[in-house]
Image 1 (spheres, helix red, strand yellow):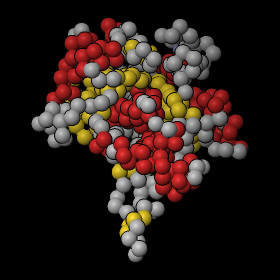
Image 2 (tube, rainbow, N blue to C red; image 1 turned 90 degrees about the vertical axis):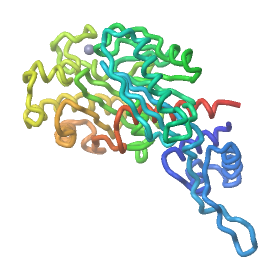
Image 3 (cartoon, protein in one colour; image 1 turned 180 degrees about the vertical axis):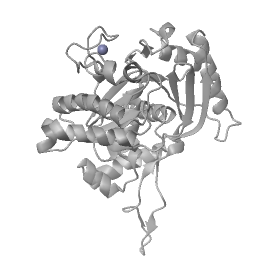
Length: 369
Ligand SMILES: [Zn+2]
């Protein structure tokens, strides 16, 4: 597949476009776009409404909008949490059409849990399912905590010590014959936002995910996930925000995670803290603003999206963060930092895992000869 075809797939994943729009966006000639599009139409991965017939009998396609053929392939997303695996199946639109949740006891061997999740996936993809029963062509897994993206291995998922080092992707591919990839869940949400949310307006942004497990983060630079040398960056949750703060699980002191995660709020305000208390919202916002400003200053980011489940209202938290970054951010004088709540429709783990699977499937397809 040519570079132009790869870029066309990437653009059409977000929204339908005409050939003229593609040529303008990619900065290449219209004949070059037509040639690239022709190859993709022959492959069946693009869809095009019937062209208009001119008085002279020729068919004109100039204004027809091309889109990705969602039925070209099915993909699957597996989101692993402590005690539950969410299994979802989608077409290339990345919207899960079928879902199932598989509950498990943390004492159960991981291979047995994954086998049960794959059984659930097989039942979703069976001929009796509402779709055509074809198996997924890619499986993407997402999970909290650091992961070894390159080798598809888990690294210390929160609350699942026995899963440390599990060769998740290798196991799944051996069991199913289907290629598999792994991403930490903040990275998966960033891909979801890129393709179906904030990314429609900004190719570069940061994402924070604050949960009862910790503080996750991801950075998209010009549409690509930034991973750093370790493959695990950024780890905003382990950026020090208090000089002599509490000892963190990573060995440092005063990490953002020690003050702004769900467990940190429980320690400070009690297990049953009021999730709507304006004082707690302000406390949380102040610390998250430190992290956001640090990333903004380091990488020149101006937009952030926040996912959280530790307070009742993301909207209130986002508003408070906006106030803090507006008071003392370096950026405030020439480019305001904008913080948003989730912008993707259906911002669920199943959806983000499917978006991830679409991303990896198309990348793999585009690299084939
Ligand atoms: Zn730490």
